[in-house]
Image 1 (tube, rainbow, N blue to C red):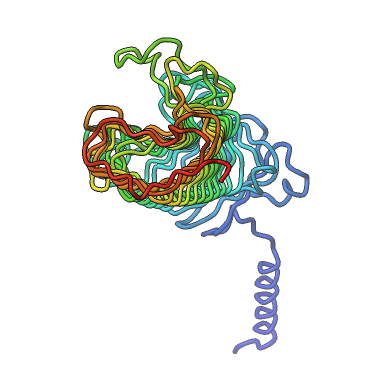
Image 2 (cartoon, helix red, strand yellow):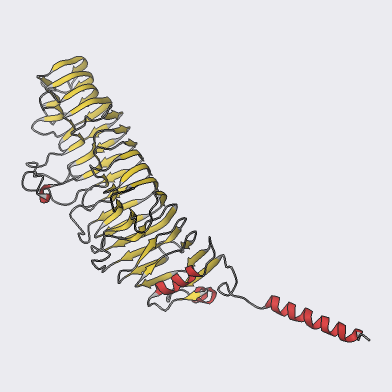
Length: 485
């Protein structure tokens, strides 16, 4: 016979057990599939430590961070709390995960003993902390404090620095030994490299196959004083988008480069660069290293010098609403496919006085003849260049429209130099509006072939517009007015 009272007692006991179990706290680390795990630093607040799933002791903190990442399910998030994490090893997030902090002013990762972050799996997000790296060995010197080697990565709200022992703060590199597919779809938003001994942002490729990097985006990023605390090599730039890699699809918006050892924004000459756009970017006071003191020699690297706000030779790069100010040698260096719209150069050559071996120019395009058009300058302005405002030679199929040249100091009494090499500036349309009293000749055209000039020059000099030699140089559309008129 069934004891009804015993059955009721058993049921009540089971309900109590279930109720107690439901109220018992279960940490995220103990749950089967936690969506988020938190890691506190040794100097985090007590509240942060009490709420964290992992608490670091200030030594080898990368171990706790990596353990949290390893415990995540696909798509999970490791959140670093406020404080400083001392990391003497590598942090390698799994595919599909996010590593985030409380912001670059609150969460700081300090890397030593070759420590760094490797993004070697797809769909990884890094967000909201600062990094600093120092003391790297020769075995890892060609990497970055943040090394991105896999596609579909998001790098957001990171501020970084490094000493001169590693190649870059942010390195985006195709390494076929780590990730064989095309490296693509990577974005940097609100990221900074500041006060470094090395490159700020660098793109590169190893090996001889599949060297193209595709579809990379930068928004509101900055490279400031890269090369100011040491010198990884003499060519440190703020942003280097094409070192040994080819580049197809690059969009850079609202970014800033200032005070870097060499160029602010840079593309090497040899890589193939297509579909690149820089919009509303500013490059200021770059090229801080001294000018070479001997003539240029191809085999002598000590004579090589960029000193550019924007350096984009031999590249399909479009510049829109960009500003170059106070850069040491060239404001904009664009050839063989460069297109500039509504750009402004100011004070190129500022801070340099000996132009014996380097002659500054606000806009420089030599050589520029392998594409059609090889160069487009439309609604662009040069203001107070300490050398040429505009220099183009060894060029063909050039379109210069509504170019404003204001008060250049000039070189050898000439504010703009178009041509010079016999018969090597041709098939061009030049519409230029020039004014200023620092030079005798505002616009100098020498040995042009099939060039049409239009515009207006305002100057008190009788040689304000000077055409020497050439063939089929049309100047009927160029008006020259006295400065007093």
